[in-house]
Image (cartoon, rainbow, N blue to C red; front, top):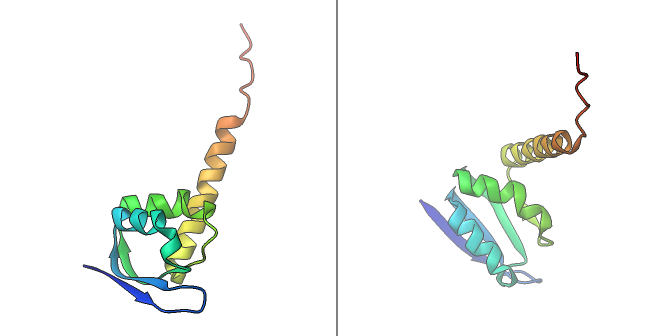
Length: 100
């Protein structure tokens, strides 16, 4: 179950997601970014693959603060580092194979 809470703040409302975070919900919140000043994910208990993908690939481009629980922030950091390493490996020029 997912619950979305809107908490009034000085810079606009904070949106807090409680429970299971699904990619569709996260995408919707990001598309309507002007609605919230901060996205609070500290009470997220689990997330689906689409939400994981969004956190790793779309959130870095956003200027709005995202607050995550420690386990989620660590996972996202590791996934981003893995992605950077994979991208770097794909960009390396291949060496010519010597002919016998």
